[in-house]
Image (cartoon, rainbow, N blue to C red; front, side):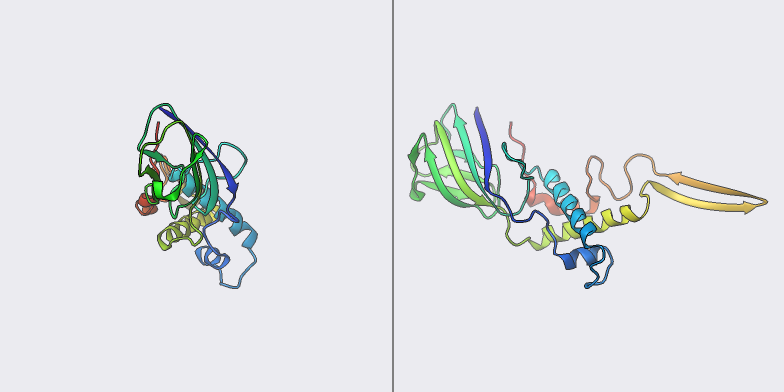
Length: 216
């Protein structure tokens, strides 16, 4: 068993995934139309939060910084009650190690190896034991194209929901002597939405490499 916690040392300057121009395009606005920028930025924050939730991005144990795939500097403390050859870092992608210590002793870079994609820190010349403290950078400065496309499609879906009721299946007005207005609603999961997810079903497969496992 091990107990791990981390804090954000340097938060990402922004957690959103799209530029102002990309948000406007997703909403069907002109590239120079800034009339809805405030609404679109707030929606982009919602999109980024939904993607982070879908990918099981870990939240810091202290502070109010939201989970994000953007680049941040973190300090993680791992308390081990048995020896391990590998420890799991709480964040992945583009990892750059700042420092590592084990029970107060500094571990030099020749004695560890990091697998950035998997978020794993291996000991080259021994095993991890006691209290391991790792300070590192992780996450994206530049949003990868596939992640950006997920954000664009999700933004477009959310924008449409803001402009009409997505639960309405059909709406009709019949006039045959007496006016009749009929509205049919979808039952269960909305079309295009995956059950149990707030993201469009079409984007979920594109998040495979960003999705974290859940460790007990």
